[in-house]
Length: 173
Image 1 (cartoon, rainbow, N blue to C red):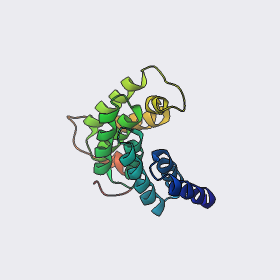
Image 2: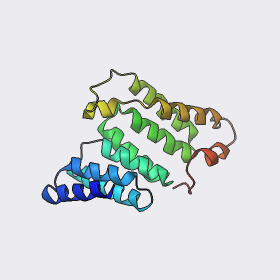
Image 3: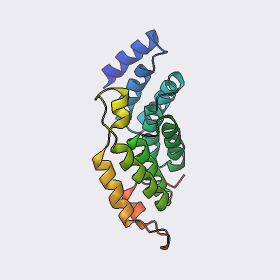
């Protein structure tokens, strides 16, 4: 809430170079909706600037952008997260979601397949960076798998009907 954000801003005044504090501020703002999403993106940008090797920051920003219907921008951030951590199931699933939203179902299927392969690697310690990178969201995977079953096959006619009801409203960007 507001007290937590105020406390965190106090900590940031003392240690503005701590990317974890910026990430925490982003997480507080993620739950605020509306203007909170813009503040969260800004905080994630600060965190990424301070720790450019952390793939979690671009993945979290991609998730926010997907929620705002900004699929092309989300896809670019997924690419950055995957450049940093090629075996990052969540980033592969976010990439699949962005591709599906852009009408690129076959590429989305390929991303989801990479997510499944990445998710089959050995789990890491919970709470650690490696644990976050290796985490496999079975619910998200199943939802995307279901959407892709409804999406046209490469030889089929292009159709966006499943996308309209499944993804957040907003123009493909």
